[in-house]
Picture 1 (cartoon, rainbow, N blue to C red):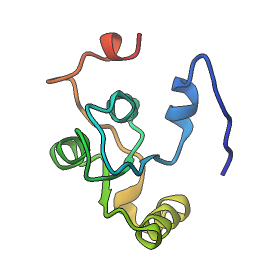
Picture 2: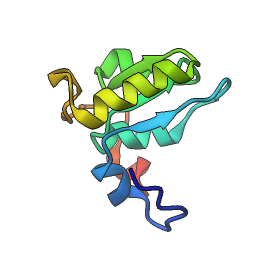
Picture 3: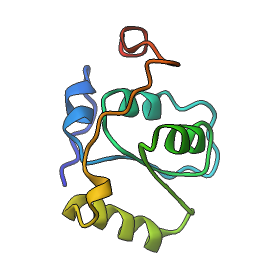
Picture 4: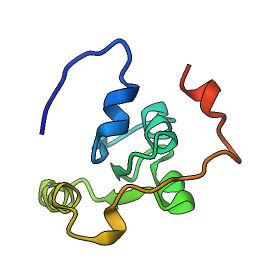
Length: 104
């Protein structure tokens, strides 16, 4: 795992990532999660904001409880690719999100 810090253009880093993780207790509309899904990067998130809708509708990640053990287990599964269902896939969000609009 590498923590890169601030980047002017985060999209190449998001695209190369095993997953995007959001562990908030409260969140509005998370553009970071939409960007991740548009870039075909799976989401690991607590049940906040748009997370449940994205994950369930597009099968683009894993919804977790706000629990450090569950987070650790889920991260390990993604990093080690223990489950074939966790492999990176293409998530078609084109019916709701315009890639050019979301990523500019």
